[in-house]
Length: 258
Image (cartoon, rainbow, N blue to C red):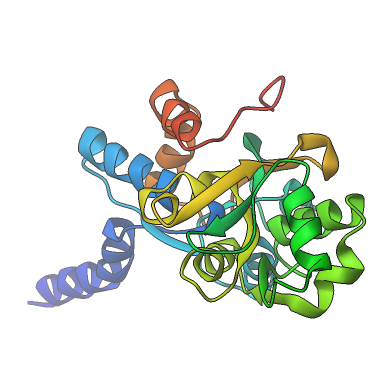
């Protein structure tokens, strides 16, 4: 009887760890990845039978949460500086790998007075004529795509004119929602989100020159909490099928890919 009780206690002690091992890992991803990464995750599940739980937001906010002990097993940042910050604090397995380079567009919903073009001439004219009441970007304080938008407006010498009219999304996806759903007359949003059918059908966009802002080099990394499924998904993100999906959603791989 004593041996049976000891055996039961041993099983019970192991049960929580077993349950945790079977749970889908929580993966934090920059908001510009929403549509692309959901497609990658579906294919990963179809090929491996394993699920991952995706949560999207701003890279800066996720970095702070990981520093405070959030249970993310993998982090896909829109700015590699955030990954390096976590690595320097010993919170990741290593310094990660580059998985994509992003681009931004100027977007205007149907019916907007803003005429979109890559040089922002239409935005300049609309601002000068007072026809822009609200213009959406992600918050530059913690969203890399927001910083790129700010740099772009400064490069075009439109920052001071646009600033009083800015509506700032908490992340790139929220900025895209503001720009496309009629809450604003336009905005600067990720190219990847402008290609999504639910955004593309609502307006027009023009890709902004890449040298108008700092490169949006996007890096992913496994945290110290990463389990087997997260490690497999990390490896899968570096395969051709996953990269082909990212390419279809407007991402490119930086030279060297590391």
